[in-house]
Length: 158
Image: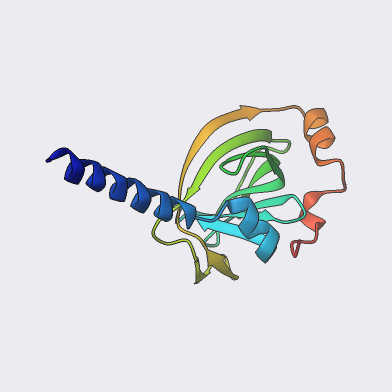
């Protein structure tokens, strides 16, 4: 008779976990719906736009920049190809890199909130993320990936 309550408890836990997991939207769905997805590591804003543009800017007046494009084949792994630089500082002239990020929305805060970035307001989403890979690439490979004029001039509205 004690087996029934244990099985029932396991069933309820399974249902609860499944319901919580079902409520977490995919990042790609947010990008399609809102035109962009932005998160921060407190030093920079990572901006993914619907039209494939990726921008990384410092939250202050100096810091790392990336201008490029993004793509994904699943909802959590993003490949960013871009030109790296430094706002208000010295940086390498032709620093082209590919960055692979694993990004997961915070399971309890999936709506995002308005915050001030580098002189801009963004809807910032709380995330967990890891840098899976970072490699230097050639200018030719960069240009092949972006297939367009300089990304800095791209329409960020998606």
